[in-house]
Image (cartoon, rainbow, N blue to C red):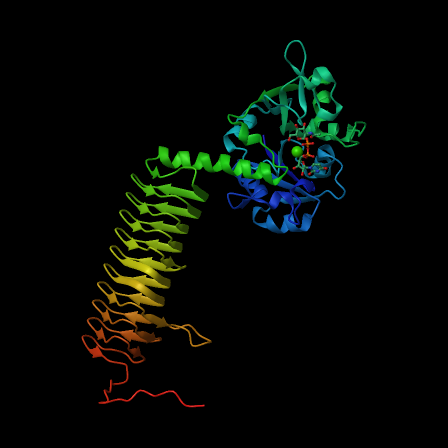
Length: 455
Ligand code: UD1
Ligand code: CA
């Protein structure tokens, strides 16, 4: 059966007290509704619809990459009203899965289980038993245990309030029936809203089979209404991530002090010290050690490399057995061959560093390509920018760059060359040459220092 997936994201989310629409608040650095759309996109044979209303343009803009059919719900009047507005775009022969933009951690496996039970005459409900069911719609069953209705908290009587099986909101209904049910909804209830949940009673009365599925984890169906709940769900997610990393053979010095905002893969025996943040796709090889307070974004670090405290690495590729940091910054486009060393207060950008080459102290190396076994002395700067254009620096194998050198690009320093400390290099240095690029030192005998002028 083909699936229409409708993601509801029209609500105001006033409890967030934010100028940003609620569904765009981020969990592990990804807007909540993106997470839902991502999971939905993984389900085969399905078409995505996104219901927007409050600040709908902003939500629509942010979700462009998912190519969902945007359905507008101006002045939202309830979940049933939201789905009804999507009704005309739903495939008559399929079924519709309803998801919520503010329930960000629903898992694909759970939805697949629901889909496997779906048929033209079956409605699948995702429910969960909670110790504290308050706030949720209650699942009402008859004496044979068949679902016969969902009653919203605000409309429930005392017996119904005592039920602790609740509606997660996520449901899958066959469209042929659904469209009819949506048309029949009324808003005769305490909130004067069109409740999607009212279709359950209609289905039961018509003898449509209602089956329930429960999520494996409670957090899959936790909704976010305010920032406190968002922070709590973030922690749940982080705990889960760090647990997965440890089970996969990495050591975390403190699993409660790591943030994985994307996907982190770790080779065997990686060790990660406290307060590291991993953003985007980060890939660590075997035995990689990461010191405290490092931030790594979209990068891969090969086997045996050691990254010391307070290092930032972004959009870079690091080879085996390198040593980086403390306090190093590898900016986008940095590539280190194996055994390279980048020391403290060194910044690199769009730079290739050859095997075993060292830039150990206080340097800026940008738009450069260094061969192997190069030694760059402390305080060396590649002057890659003339105020308008960026230019490249090429340095061959075995070059020795003395301390406090400025290398003005575009320029080439050929292999085996040596640059004297304090030089400003503006011309090509040929292989094995020694270059001085500084004024000659003069020493004056008997120099009298100036004395203080009288007033
Ligand atoms: C809903 C369910 C309730 C369930 C709970 C689970 C109904 C009537 N009730 O209640 O049974 O236990 O979710 O969290 O369905 N939205 C729209 N347009 C609207 C109204 C809501 O897009 O007109 C969106 C909201 O942005 C939100 C979601 O639908 O993402 C849920 O709406 P909300 O008002 O929070 O529903 P609840 O009252 O929590
Ligand atoms: Ca809610």
